[in-house]
Image (cartoon, rainbow, N blue to C red):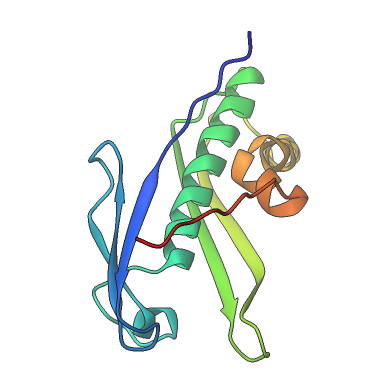
Amino acid sequence: MAKQVQQTATTVWEGTIARGHGTVSGARGVLGPLEVDMPNRLGEATDKTTPEELLAAAHSTCFATALGTVLAGLKLPPERLEVRAVVTLDLSGPRSEIPLIEIDVTADVPGADDAVFAEALAEAEQRCLISRVLTHGTSIRASGRLG
């Protein structure tokens, strides 16, 4: 029997997109509530988060665990991985796009050389579920009700 695990987050948004605001929270109480707004999404610094920042957080975490797993499998367990994900939001066209996500890793891996580390990075990119969803897609079903 296949095992499936579901994680849930909920966003509540009030007002228009341009002037409204919202909060996002995880169902288990570990995530948030975090405030979300549009000005930060448009590059105007606020103390609130954005969907793109949350995507970067998810991607950097997923990539770090994938890379750690790959390195451990090579008998090169990392002492420290710092994974930075930068999500680029392009607002210049008729529809907003995310044309690029850059992953930058600084690693302390005793015994690893550049070639082995490059191979581990490539393998981690294939193993990271967030990377796979973004490059290969996944089924998304939207439903709703007025209430």
